[in-house]
Amino acid sequence: MSAPHQMIAAAIQRERNRAGKSLSALAAQAGIAKSTLSQLEAGNGNPSVETLWALAAALDIPLSLLFETQAPATTLIRGGEGEPLESEQSDFTAVLLSRCPPNVRRDVYRVVMQPGQVRRAQPHPRGTVEHMLVCSGQMRAGPDGQEEILQPGDYYTYPGDRPHSYEALHADTLFIMVMEAP
Image (cartoon, rainbow, N blue to C red; front, side, top):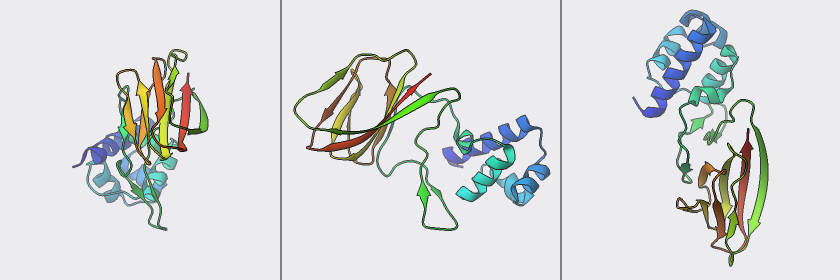
């Protein structure tokens, strides 16, 4: 059983128990076979995004709760990495990079940066987290001492309440920055 399957299995069981639903009741509400749900809770099978959406809807939770684990302070997901969720209905693959915690606000920025100067950022308010997704170019970013070189498709999240920096390594480096604050 892979780590993502274990995480999904534990989350389905945790949320089903929290909701006080039997295996049969949840399966019926989600429109899936009880044996399928049993296999998923055992960490077996490879659920489609539609199956996971159906379970999340039946449990009245956001889909991202099925991927909830204790998050490390920094996360780096290189382009092409991550656990893909595929559709049965179309050529659609999604990788959950980050879920939004309750009672948090997120501001999303599209940033174009040129090489030549490092942008040093002072700590933002306590609890701030930054998310970076490089679209094109190359950059170095992160908290002091934990900077990473990021290529297109790379995702990096880190505490924004510590000194950090951004540096474009190629002309017209384009990235999406999300500031998450309590």
